[in-house]
Image 1 (tube, protein in one colour):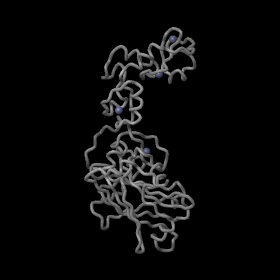
Image 2: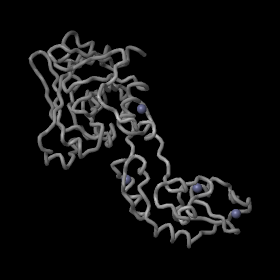
Image 3: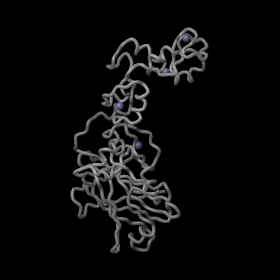
Image 4: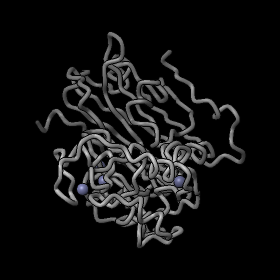
Length: 325
Ligand SMILES: [Zn+2]
Ligand SMILES: [Zn+2]
Ligand SMILES: [Zn+2]
Ligand SMILES: [Zn+2]
C-alpha cells in the first residue's frame, strides 16, 4: 500500500520564499475572513426570520415541512394545506398538517403568486445582493459568484463545499494537504514503482501567494495508449480572477527539459475536466523515466515552477481551450 502512493519531497534549494512545512501545523499568517463554517450550510433565507421583504405572502409560500419557499408545482390537500413538491414525494400521500390523503391537487393560485415574486439569491447570506423573479433566480444561482466552491481535492469523492478560507482549512486539516507560502516552488515527486500507473495517483499541494490560494496537482493517468504524468495549477476562486495569474512549470534531467506556461484554471472547473482537456504539463512515461535517471526503476521528477500576476488579463484566456481535441 505504502509503496503505491506517490510521495512528494519538497526542497527549498535555489528557490526563494518557498517555506516548506511538513508537520502540518503551519498556519498562514494572512488575514482570513472567517465565514467558512457558515458557508458550508446554505440556508433558505425566505421566511419569517429573513431580512428579505417579510410580508405574509412570503410566509404563505413557506412549505410547512421543510420551511423553504415553495415554487411551482405547489401541491395542496383536500382541506387546502399546501406543500412543496420536494416534500410531497416524502410524505407518502398523507397531508402532514391534517393527515388526510393528499391526492394530486395543484394550488395554481399560489403558484402564480410564487412566479410573480422577486426573491433574493439563495447565496444571500454568503454576500450576494441580487434579487430575481423565480425562474431567472434559478438560472442565476447556478452561476452565482457567491455560490460555495466544491472541495478541490482529487483523490476521493469529497462532498464538502464552502468558501475559500473554509476549503483551505479543510484541505489542510482533513486531507492533510501540504501548504506552502510563496510563488515559486521546487518539488520532487518520487514513486518507487512507476510501472503501475493507475488513475489513483494524485498529489495536491496548496500555494499561498498574492493573497490567493492555488492548487498544484500532480498525477499519473492513462492517456490514449500510454501512461503519462501531468502537473497543472488551479486557482481557488472564480475563472475571471484566475485569468489575472499565470504560471510556469518545468521538469527535466540529463540536459533536457520540458516547460509549460499557462493560466491557472478555476476550481469551478473540476479537476477531471482540466485533466481531460490536457491543460497542463504532460510528461510521457518514457520521458519521465529518462528525467528520473538511474535504472528507470524509480520515478524521481523534479518539478519547478512559479506563479505570477499579469498586469492585464490576457484576452486569449477568455476562451478556455480544450487541448485534447
Ligand atoms: Zn417542503
Ligand atoms: Zn391537509
Ligand atoms: Zn447570487
Ligand atoms: Zn475535501
